[in-house]
Length: 58
Image 1: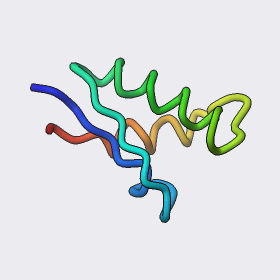
Image 2 (image 1 turned 90 degrees about the vertical axis):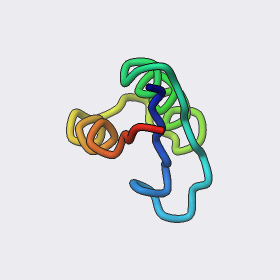
Image 3 (image 1 turned 30 degrees about the vertical axis):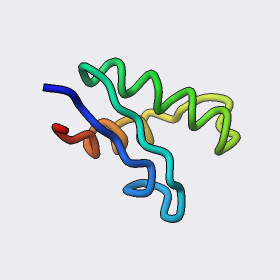
Image 4 (image 1 turned 45 degrees about the horizontal axis):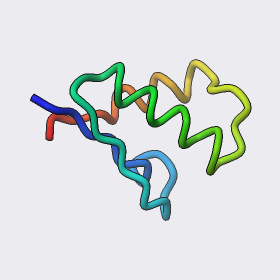
């Protein structure tokens, strides 16, 4: 089953949605988005943990 992460669950007002075949793919897309659109040079472990917890089955 594919997975989905809605950035708005973490950053209200952001419309980015990452979809992938598994958690690793969604996390990679989410990290790229955070760096590009939210100016995060690195992803702090607590942010990564919250993002991973917000990933749902599609």
